[in-house]
Image (cartoon, rainbow, N blue to C red; front, side, top):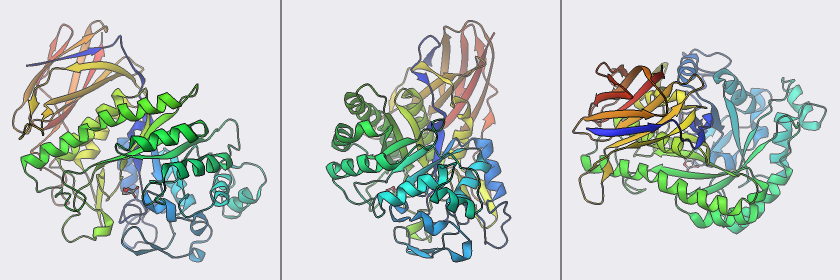
Length: 495
Ligand code: AHR
């Protein structure tokens, strides 16, 4: 039996809904064929978007969507993607498979997608191969309400009102595909770009997000914050969970227990990375508050056999569900520093929540975790503790068997999300809620299966959440037997 305690008297603050954010790059079949069906025969579309995919994403809850990259962002010239489609420039997507990008999905299409998803747009601008003027014009094009050259161009392209795009990323991975810059050089560029990204309306101030570190590159965060911290509102960080090395990452579905535990152990590193980057940000933020944006995270495996290596298409198993569960628990518990996170990527790329094949789609185990965690969005995080034992194949590869987070919604309902990382044994959870009074009712759902379990187009419902029937209500909480390798969500209503 493992004791869990949720303390309703202690909180680190509100969980920013943007922690449940997503990322869509011009990469493989993420946009073309995944989100956008414009021009593709046989796939239904509504204003170009796939209604089946949009419907599923709305049911899951997408608060914010980052676009157009990734590495693609620093090769993207936004004017190529506006105006009549037949006049748009066809370019080569040099980062991702060398395929032709016809620019039929551009700024207007992205913002239409965000409208359909009811989410905030987050645009990453081109610093690596663009200019300050080009980036500044893009902001003017999207956000200027009155008369101006860019607002007039927008109107000529069919859009009267400004979109008021709030989130702007100043480049992407400036240390790598975004220009291979040194932090000192990027920090100076970041100051310059931030200066010319104007808020055109005081009711809609911009949030300027600096291109941050790769994983544990604390030097990058230090130099950036020291030199440019006062010019930005947030600093990003990217962290991918790769079980092997970058040349042999490992299969998404065919893995042994060693790779299973290594993956989970690497995912759990997020906690330490967030703490260390946050400490540096706080040291240099002065009287302002600079947030941490983890705008790329998730698993990265070898591509599915027979698919284009440049398209990063991978399957998604219960192991991915556990990576999502622990990552989201970690973000929840760092809600006083993490203001946004964007899993990579939303459809058909890396740790996707949806996979498509022609006009068919399926929901991955990761989708279900996001849906089960949905009510954490904008809820008040609660301090939580769970007794754990260490499990794993090797001494160095050990992980705690249980991992939880909790929050309280505006109607007083407490959501507790728990993952059992043990692939061989179930666990009994004895959960007490302190500072909440009488418990009126408890309802729970669970997502479980073998570590390799996944959904296919032939069997799309192999992994899906089901109600937990065996919950025993106690004076101050509940007891429940969790299956092995599972993610569970409990809603506790106070009396
Ligand atoms: O998400 C795939 C790629 O990973 C992104 O384009 C880049 O930013 C990162 O290296």
